[in-house]
Image: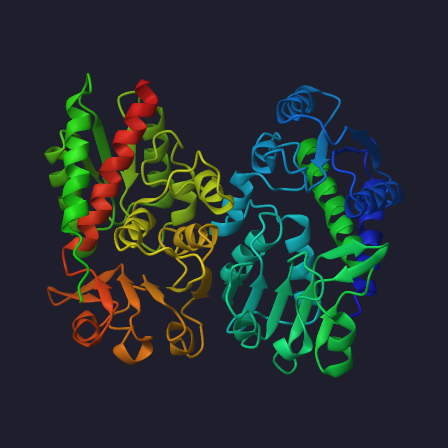
Length: 277
Length: 277
């Protein structure tokens, strides 16, 4: 069964539109795009579309893929200092010659609406009520809430350990009393772990990694990333087959980034309110 | 087999003594003690002894167990502002009426030699080279190194999810490419997970939780916490039995806090060097 997520998504946008309508000024969200791969371009397009839908200006600054690390670092510094820029994101992933962690750690925490900064990651891990939840982990938790799933007492398998999805979702699940099986690309016999889990969260960026025979009966599958090969979207989970059998699976193409983008807008609005209270 | 840890421990102190001997001034480490339980008192005594052994002044400030949260918070604030106090620790755990997270998050990051601050926890999680490793996770990784154990490709079960041991060791293991089974006190059938692991790290503060029949053959057991009942030390792992069978286990009573204390002195020296370079 495909998890129907449209209702929550619509409700989120309805609430956001109402909120922004009351703002005295129109918020502006800036974005830096360096690597023009098709996934990133698709994301940026969606971010622009939905920012404008909720009455947030969206300004894109695009740099050449060959930009050096020091040049990008200086751009970040100028964005931090520019008083006209209140919030901005750096579209990830960055090209391989750039140290992504170094760039992220230099985004001014007050301007960072993706919430990847270590201070925030630490707050999410030790659970501090002032923590902000990064966009992708935020909607994963929303889905679980929407499906009335309390992770307490449950076993959740998280596939891969990225800083933007894997690690913060592991933090949130541990704090919500789940038993977490944290796998990575060097995990031997990954099916040994996926078959033990009531919930499998897959954010591996590896097409069809998760197959039907790797799941427990009635497992919930949350599929986060996709790869585009020859203009076709390939999910990490073999979604169609899983759907045919017995599990609940999310998403259908289109929903993942719709949700991530919705959470980004929610974070921007939250940041605006913090700055203007 | 009991893991013999004396050599590394001696080497650590030899190196520290040599380093501090070259310092122009004698470093001072302050400690705040609120809860006088026997474990905490034992730790404080050891910290004083070994600080003095490496030529670090140790100054203890003791408060009544009934101190209110706001009073303790104000003490922390005055410690942060006091220019004579360069580094200090707050002995944990704090009494239950005090929000431990709130206190820890207010220790000035530059004076914090336990490295529990969220900014540092986040750096450990996303792995930033400027991260400092908190004392207990630090010696756990030292033991693994000492035993020539590369956790890559291996399954490690971590028992309990405390902010000072469980969570930072989970972060370090994930970054070292281990598959981590993160359990907590609500995990059902915990033996299902311990029996899968080549390494079991138990920091549950729950006497004899880990028994021989809960382990894989040749498992490495790292036992972190103990409880004192009727003046007797009780480990989380049934150490004697485990030792009789086939696993490698650490520690024998005395070693755990010896190692934690050694790592605290190492952190203090590192902090001194940072401040005086």
